[in-house]
Length: 395
Image (tube, rainbow, N blue to C red; front, side):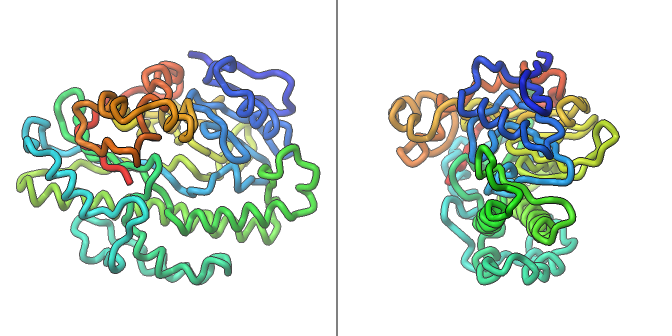
């Protein structure tokens, strides 16, 4: 699918989604952000849907400004994946037992580790920069400085909602580990603090949506936000690295000769400094991954519809981006009212996972069709591998 341009906005809106299939609320959000004086352009991914302030599944490029609500409250949320030497036929018949071992290693939902994970004692975990990372906690926004103990025991935990940990098999039968998580409570607290700070600034008065409030380049509040933002993005990256190492060590105990390829990791709620049209811009990806030429990325469907490992094609019209997943087609509330537990069991048949009311809102039927999403962005990424879930752990 080639992109379409939406007319009538101040800055260009380029869509890899069908405008007729995007909710009216989401289209209004896209126009609102494109009309901001700082916006250079907006790229809309095929998984786009309504979100706080800015749509999920949009890429916003601004000159000398950034909107914290357009980043989202789960700063640095993203994906990690690693291919193993294991073949799917080598997995045990009792997949429930293996799922329970994974859930013991990685706390889910509101769970946390009893004591902070010591990186030096986790085999296979990169050791660089941990001391400096935690030392920088004292420079975060004052309201969150009392949360260090919580942040430490949540490092290496999954969370809930659409976060997951999976064992998958690709089309050649190779086993992969895939996980989705972010910066946990500390990222949420930082995001909410800075969103409120931005709303109070005089230049944000009269915006069509108060959640589009921005910080301006060169201002102390922008500097403070970017410092906290980049720390939270690093927290999210390290959080996924810890979980991935813990999971790999569970597999090492069960499969003595197992080997692992180099992990793939990508944020999909974050900000980066990038140059387009010869202009240095702050690019916000909210529910989108970087897909520069050669960049490896991960695009999941839902808890039973597979995941794609992709390589970016470097499409500058999309600000070198692609979708972060299938994207929801209905709210959690509507999903719970629409589907039954029998529906959940049927739609997740063949996958070892929870099939109870606590995850009903994550049923595959609540998400857009991942195959259609992938077809709509064939000029943004190429497929490297297609994975199907064997085990899915959710909070």
